[in-house]
Length: 442
Image (cartoon, rainbow, N blue to C red; front, top):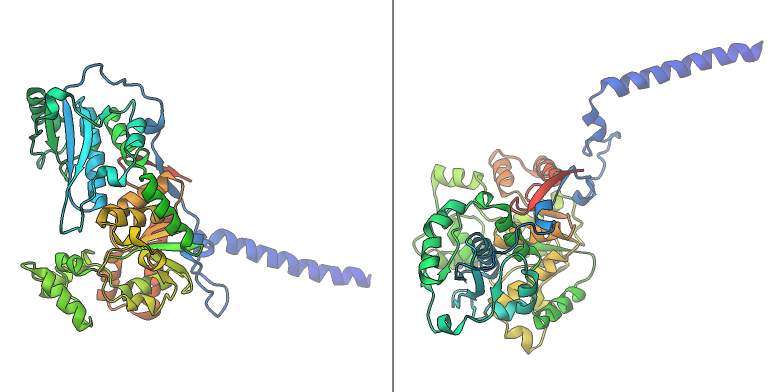
């Protein structure tokens, strides 16, 4: 009898507790349980590293690109096209990929591209100095015909230059460029930056995608050096593409306070006639995300994303980075290609070949972050998506500028930066270009 009187109160308390828990579970918003920033203690739980967050979407190669070819190449081509590529390595790579799509669109045979020799980029290497020509030709079979040499009757002639600066899509090229190709038989083009690839038929888009992500392999010599560099980096590591060179800052027309005298002088020398914005215009420009992140700002964002300060960081960058101590004073394990490689073969490299090393290391890194959204960043992110590597984030300059202009500092700024980058990562924003990749919900 005594046992019976004890069980009833215990049973009642248990039932009441269970009922309260079920009410809390069903009537509390789901985000309360799922938001990683929520803690159940009085002391705030340490924020998880950004890579530990589960993604909801990923970008993968579209099926129409990878599936077997259904549009065979015509037996007779309309002529020969050479793509003239300008700028840095990744800009030239982009021009080449676009040129391949145009060649297929116009049913032309592609001549090996011409890489610009530019003193500005400290560059004299050609396409064949960076990429494996035979591999490129082999991989493009069925997509577009590629030749190393022109027929004798054409080889002695220079190609007729066709201006493509205003071409934006399929019909522009067919109506405006194809007549020149048919008339002269051999033309050279530089694809327009503003062109609309979504207007291409799928067989032309597939040729572009194949060129960009399957057909461009480094030469044996360069790949060997790139592999040597990759193996020398302590694992795991983060590849960080940091852009804070004098010309980059000058081009952005942004003003920075607190820079060293040497940095300010270098920026001023690079400005020429591109004077910095002032007043309200400067504020609007910065809040649109147009100003490069400083190394110090970059370090702050990395800490906000819970990237450990003992992380090995490979700095994928060219010469002339300013204010680097703003990063290295916080993240002390920073390495570069010049610190890891030695030998005459490295010191004699030019801009393209050095950029190729950064590209190779970045696509094979454990994680990749970029402070800008330039040609290299777009190519690296897409190639990593092609390889199934999704630890990729573009640091959000616009969000950083908006938050700081609103007066956020310290923990408030850290929390805001964490949330916006978490959401970007969850949805896979910026991790690949839509030209060749399709979004898949997980």
